[in-house]
Structures are given as C-alpha cells and as structure tokens.
Image (cartoon, rainbow, N blue to C red; front, side, top):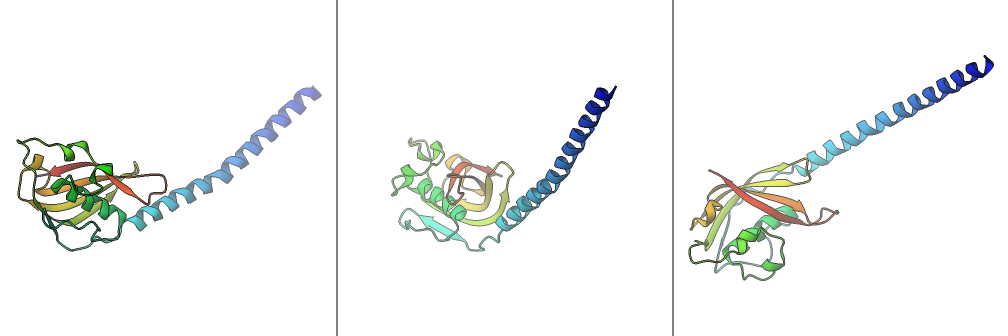
Length: 168
C-alpha cells in the first residue's frame, strides 16, 4: 500500500513539473509571434513613387534604388530587355527570360512604377508593378506585373526573382 502511495505521489509530482514547464514555454511562443509581426511590419516600408524607364540604349549597371528587393526587380527588367547585359546570366532569374527565338517579341523599352509589396508567410515577397513596354513578351510587361522574390541565402540580404506573372 505504501508503495502505491509513493508511486502516485511521484506521478503527481512529475505531472505538476510538466505543467509548470508548459506554462513557462507559452509566453515564449507569444513573444516569438509578436517578434514575427514586428518584422513583417518593419518590412512593409513605403515604396518609391518614381516612374522608371529603361531602354536598350540606356541600361545602367547600378540600380536606381538601394533596396535589395527593388534592385532585384530592376535587374530582372534590365535582363528582359538585354539578356547579354553584364551579370544577367549569373543572376538566378526565371529561365524564360533568356529564351531566344524569332517568334518571341522581346521588349526594347520598359517603364514601370512600384505599386505594392506583399510579404508572404513562405519567406517570399511579391513586388507589384504597373508596367508598360513596347512588345508582348508573354504578356509579362504590360499592366500589373508581379515579381516573386526569394532570399538568396539565409541572411536575407540579397534577393532573387523566382517568378514573374501578370494580372490583366
């Protein structure tokens, strides 16, 4: 009988200790969620209101904006205009940008303005642009064009355009 009482007391002690550990870990989870929300709010910065225009004769190597995400979009646009531009083939861009065929109508001029930015939970970012170009190019340079960005590495200091799609 004494043995049963000792076993029951030990089980109750273990249960109590487990509950106390669970209660201690809950505030940490809430803190992590709050930190994620602060990070997302921090990343939702104001986009520039400028209209950017690039043509085949005017493709500067440096980006107009110092923001890594916006620079990744700009590089993708410049490589769309001229795939032979310096460093284009070193960038991790969608393969269709480099397609070359006589039937493909590649633009020689693209104008765009940043209109929205969405940070998605899967560690990607969508940059929305209002774009105009002088060709069809798969329908990906007229109207609302969305650039899906992924971090190049774990430090999230450099971004790559993973995909491009348009909303008509």
